[in-house]
Each structure stands twice: as structure tokens, then as C-alpha cells.
Length: 441
Figure 1: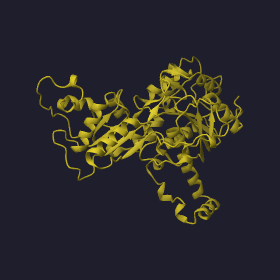
Figure 2: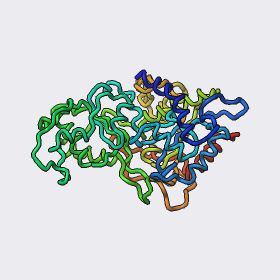
Figure 3: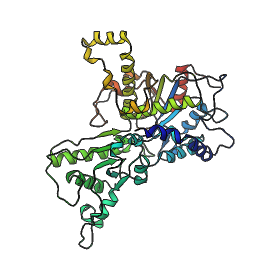
């Protein structure tokens, strides 16, 4: 775990230079290099932007995105407030995503400003030397090694070694009898980066791995013991691309995997960890990066407020509100009046969060947050896209009866109520600046 801070800090200088070149901005300084003049307004808030449905739809930029970022970057190419991009995508490296954003937005973005759904995997060091099976698309082996895994097997590698296991597609079945090529080590854990291309192949082989305890040379075993550790990134049921309606996301793949496993075994599939929005772990990473940017700019005011801008109620809004609840509970632990109010409301001290409840892995690694609130802003250019005029009262417009969140996150109406609803990301930036009385120069 201690390598995580070094990882973030060590890449800063190089990634800044790369982003500056690839953004095509000649002569401008990197968005977070150098010091900040005291004559300019110094923010005490940071911005978290979702990407798909907020800044782009598929490969097409949303027109309001460039307009928004013209307000966030000064004439020298420097950001006027700390900004982090938080995406549930997991099919590329952080640097690749930063380069894409630099090209789309026309401003220099570094990998230190990007959180992918798989970024927190670097903290799970107890699995880094185990043999792990990875599922997803894109450069999955490179991604796995980039976040710390040293012994990685892909689904394609399994299929090549055990060709008789992938039988759904008749055209891919072996033409001649073949024997397994048992040259792979026993799998000790499974990591799911994102939705794969051939779902039937991945579902079959992941189930096989779980039911054989990592040894595909054996038959399915009676489930008398817990299955292999399973770590999953990106819980989005759907996401918004160029099509008029949302498309299946990795959350849909997880629904398939969970239900197939339960149908076969009669037992629930268990996760060692779930990462990406709406997990609090992802937002804690984002808060750490926001805090780091403010320190690099030598802004004196601590970052006390976060604004999370997204298009999906069940991930962006739920996650921001869940993290806001966590931040409020941290404040309550240090405020006797707040504790007394909570006890008076509930009639019990058990509702007051205890110190050991937050003495966890990411806080010990990234330090305690300076933020005390995380406010959610919903845009209407992605998954949530009402045909009617944008309502003025957010509290009366979201009454979800179907929960599209992950199985292991309980439905809570308060968590899917956005703090604000706006048409697009440009309006979101205007709203936030107005809320904070912030006038960039």
C-alpha cells in the first residue's frame, strides 16, 4: 500500500509534460505546475467530472464540454480550480484516458487528474503476487501489471490452453479432438475490469474457475468452501454512447455472472471488493487527488467542498451522496452538538459512527480528507435525459421505483436525489461558481 503515494507523486512531472505536448497547447504552462499568485482568487472547492454522458457520448464530444472548460482554464492554460475526472471505464490506462481528454477538451490533462474504475486495485497488495485471472477488453494484461499484479492470466490464455471449455459458438469449437495444454499456473483470484467482448466465453470460463477452485484440469467441485476471491471494477448497469438509449455496461455482465453462479450452486456470489462509482473508495481517491492539486498550486485555503457532476443516478449521484454522508459522519464524530442531535433523533448512541468504523485501508494510505461535503449535480446529456423541461425543484423530480444499482448496494431514495439538476456541464460549472461566489480572473 505504501507504494501508492509514491506512484501518484512520482508520475506528476512526466505526465504533465506529456499532457501539455499532446493537448497541442504551445507555450502554455501545465494546468497544475508552478505557483499561484496571491492576487488571483483561491478556491476552497474541487470538481469531480464523470466523462461518458457528461463530456462525451461515445467518441463524440458534447458541445457544452468545451464551453465549460473555457471557464475552468485561464489564459496561461492553468486550471483555476482543482479538477479530477472520475470514470467507471476500465479498458485503458490512465495516461491513455488523459490524452483522449486533452484532445477532446483542448486543455492539458495529466494522468494525475484521472481515476479509472481499476485505479484502487493498486491498494490490494495481498493479491499482487498471486496468479489472477483478468476479464475485460483492451490491454487487460498491461492494465493489470500497471496497477501492481505480477502474475496475470487472461481469459484468452485460458481458452487457448483449454479449447474444449468454450463451446457456445459452434464456429469456435475445435475441429479435431484436442487435449488441454496445462501450462498455466493455478488461478488464485479473479479480477473483472469491465465488460468483455465475448460474454459467453468469459461467463463460462469465470464460472469454471470459480467451481474448480482455479484448476481447470479438474471437474466442478461441490461448493463446500468459499469460492476464490473476486474483485470487480465498474458497476454501471448501463452507460450512454452515441445511441439514443443507454447501452449495457459491466454491471449488466455482473448481473449475468451472479445469477448463473447462484442458479448452478444455490449460493450468492461474493465479492472481495467492488470498485468504481458509487464506491466510497473511488471518491476518497478523488478527494486525495483534489487535495494534492491544491497543494501543488500552493493554494492556502483547504479544499472543504467537492462537487460531483454526472449523468447517472445510480452511480454518479448515488456515489457522491454516499460519500457526502460519510463526510458528514466524520464531522459529527468531532462535533458534540451534532452527536447530541443524532442521539436525540434516534434515541440511541449506536447511530453515531465510531472511530474504528473508518480506520480502514484507504484512509491509512491517503490520509484523512480535508473535504467536509460532496454535492451532487445531475446533467441531462447522458443516461438521465428527461424529455420535459428541466425541473426547477430537484426534490420532486426523481422518484425511482426500479433500482439500477448493484446488488450489494441497498436502495436509498435519499442517495439518488441530486443536489442540483442542470441541462449540461457548462450550466453545472456556472451553478457551482455561483454557489461558491467564485469569479475567476
